[in-house]
Image 1 (tube, helix red, strand yellow):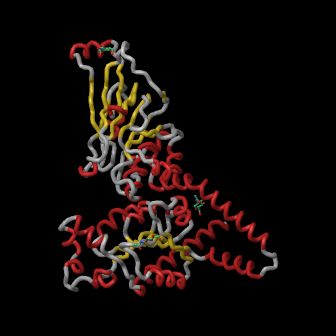
Image 2 (cartoon, rainbow, N blue to C red):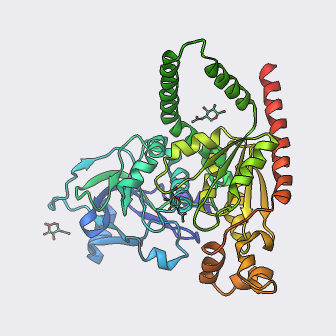
Image 3 (cartoon, rainbow, N blue to C red):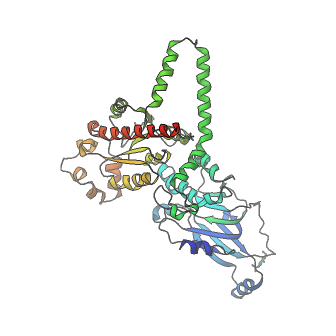
Length: 442
Ligand SMILES: *[C@@H]1O[C@H](CO)[C@@H](O)[C@H](O)[C@H]1NC(C)=O
Ligand SMILES: *[C@@H]1O[C@H](CO)[C@@H](O)[C@H](O)[C@H]1NC(C)=O
Ligand SMILES: *[C@@H]1O[C@H](CO)[C@@H](O)[C@H](O)[C@H]1NC(C)=O
């Protein structure tokens, strides 16, 4: 099926659309491709010599082929697809007398996609956008121009590090840039495999989720190196201010040396709904077990490189089910991810984060809370289906799930119960660390 598709797109002068996926449509245009943002169109001009000329003049059609597409990866969700700009892809006869010039000539392919829809939520940004962009464009080895519908400057800023690892060229704002851009090829729409993952069996060169993570690592390294250099400079300045015999400095040094040998645990903290209300006690317990603990509170404006730095240097990540769990993508393969699963969120927690985390090679532990650990326990009768049978409540519809379980629930961890998971994660991390040291010393 896929091989056939690649074979067919070999023909220039036609549009070939693969509409077989449930998540996305992808159309490929090869030949003389020109943008026309005023009419939300991409034209493919076909040379009208010889046979084609004869046939088309017989039917007297100006349009030889016409396809419509909304280049966004949530095809099955009509309500959000309706908010995405629709593109007209049109094959036209080349007309020597008409003047369709190019304002900008590109000699590499374009990939067209939308950053509208659910963009603004980090899960959707990675799942619907960044991962599909990697899947669709990585084989072009940065020789590709991204043309973006529903373009946002903040998105370009937020994902600039990653975009520059996927493309050597500045992205184009499709509707904001009225010039005619000409390309030898256009891929319209993004391919997507499954939730937050890359399926190697569908990739050229069998690229997988770890290869995607390696792109992230390269993307964030320059920024992180800059942060490290800043900190080292600050530390040197402090050192030169304090007398070298200052005993307090020596102390700090020793504590840091000691800290760096401990496994590191990051808590991705939420406030508002699905917060851990006894988070301070959790931190204390984790420290008592032997972890070095960092609490990270990501929000829409957090710099991703800083979150990457925290997670790339940690052994265990703990968080309550929600979009921020998307950051498991920043954990090193082989590290531990403990997802706290509030009442009524089992399916989503497993589907969106548990399963994809395993595919990245993380050790995944799902911690399904007991009714007593939910803030809903104080609000509902002990026999209420909200506590006893969440799936029956979820069956009533998304609005129930959202209001009751997602927006209306906090977690008060039973620390004695949770401790078992943390100790497991600690032992596992200690083993890994000592194995790594062993390898390095050999
Ligand atoms: C070619 O372009 C000219 C000028 O725009 C137009 O008058 C003519 O109808 C076009 N011919 C075809 C076959 O489209
Ligand atoms: C992530 O951690 C690995 C191993 O600890 C390190 O080699 C790499 O440079 C780190 N990446 C970044 C971007 O800091
Ligand atoms: C969440 O934290 C942010 C920043 O720390 C704060 O501005 C905001 O008011 C908090 N929201 C809630 C619901 O506590």
